[in-house]
Every structure is written in structure tokens, then in C-alpha cells.
Image (cartoon, rainbow, N blue to C red):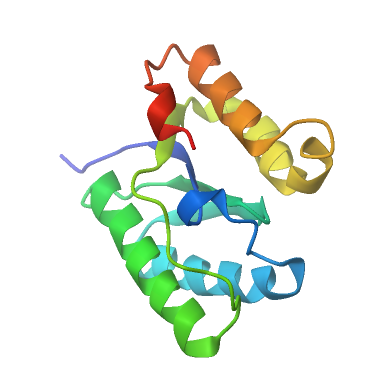
Length: 148
């Protein structure tokens, strides 16, 4: 029998101290770099976007790829890319940890639109409030000390 999966994740992570250093002018280049990494891991990227202090990645995980391995690969490689290209001069690295939430395939279109419209969402909601809302909506326990 072959392996069949549909493992849809929304992954969110931030620069250290939630520094608002991911300036709009360089984000597209960063997103292209991350998209290439995801493709090289045989995962399918549905959408990537973000604002100054965090990014969202909506992806399907290939069954041979562990979530933590994918996130580590993205963080290490993108951090090196940012530093080598000096894409974001104030970038000091990524925060430890990340948020990853699974969704059913029926939520895909709404999630794509949600990730696509990050700038509009953050005119009304801070990134911390957005994270708290996602954690609470998905009944994920958290420690407030690690949300900064």
C-alpha cells in the first residue's frame, strides 16, 4: 500500500524579541527563499506571508518530514540568508520556538485568504493578540512568559 496523507499546518514564528525588523521591501525575497526550502523538502507551500514581526507559512507536510525538522531547516537557512544578503539589517535571528496548528483540508481556502491578508489583519490586531486568539481557539495550553 502507498502512503496517503493530508497534513496541513499553519506555522508562525517571529524574530527575536518580536523585533519589527522584517521590512516590507525585503519580505518577498525572504518568502521566495523559504518557498524553495519547503519545495526541496517535498512539502507543498500553499501560502506564505507576514508582517514586520512574524511570518505565517501554510504548508502540507510530506510524510517523511518531521515538523520540527522543517521549521529548524527554515529558521537556520533563512537566518543565514538574511545575514548574508543583509536583507534586514536589524534582524538578530529567530525566536526559539514556533506555533504550528493543524487544520482540516476543508479550511484550506479560508486559511489561504487569512495568510494572504496579514497586513489588513494587523491593522486591527497585534501579533501577540493574534497568537493568543489562535491558541485559545484551538485549545492549546501556553505559558504567557513565552509569548513575548
